[in-house]
Image (tube, rainbow, N blue to C red; front, side, top):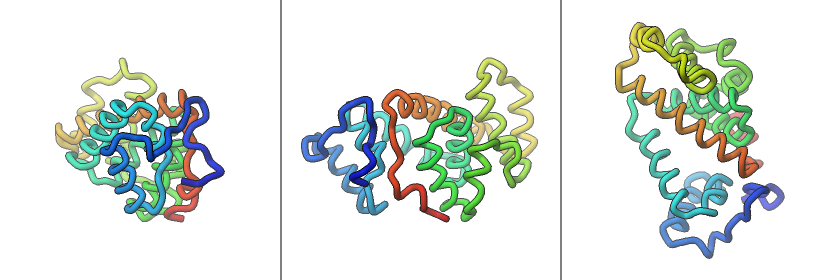
Length: 190
């Protein structure tokens, strides 16, 4: 963890050594993989049962999906941009840069996915994700038809909605806790 950036400011950040064994193991695995501990792990350590549920669902979203990892991250950033979520914009923006191999795409998606340099299928995908974020009651069959016309399966449409819904929750928790992105995220993939 970057010593100068707290994981969150509105709740106490737990000491990793005092967390249950399974959480410490997961945090150690992430640190070994990434080279640092993303602050979201430390923040969710505040409530171990929520940590487990949050990361189990996150794992399902990125491992059992009809979407490419780049697409999952694009959805996260477009939704987080709509929600002004600083933590997810920075952390998942880094992942967009890495998975899409594009140093500019995340910045475009955070600002406005409609002006991003993406294909029509990805624009339709992000249109649904942002509509589900900003006007959920307005999602209708025309949104599904647009996605089907662009080659998305029923399962992929479910996955688009699931990622969008989960990151609406994540964004709101990041706002509540005032989660702060690690300094490392700002430079990854640039």
